[in-house]
Figure 1 (cartoon, rainbow, N blue to C red):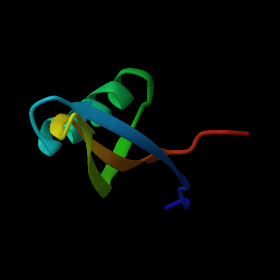
Figure 2 (cartoon, helix red, strand yellow):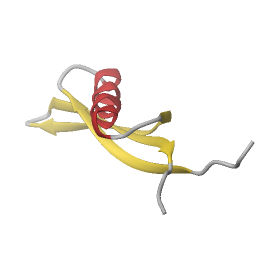
Figure 3 (cartoon, rainbow, N blue to C red):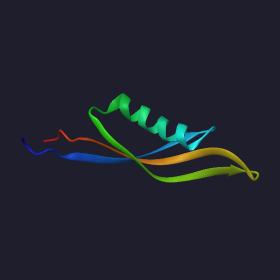
Figure 4 (cartoon, rainbow, N blue to C red):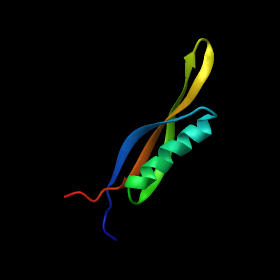
Length: 70
C-alpha cells in the first residue's frame, strides 16, 4: 500500500448557541471545498463577550485531509 500524506488546516467556527455548533460549522464549511476529510480535532474553545454577556461561542478546529499536491 502506498504511503499517504495528510494536510492539516486550522479553522475557527462560531455559533451563538454552543461550542458544539461552532465546531460543526467549521467542519461543515470545510466539507464544501475540501475532499477526503479525515479527522477534526477541537484544539481550543473560547467565548466572545459584549457588555459582559456571551455574544458567540468559538471553536478552533484542526481539520485533516488527504494531500494530493504535486
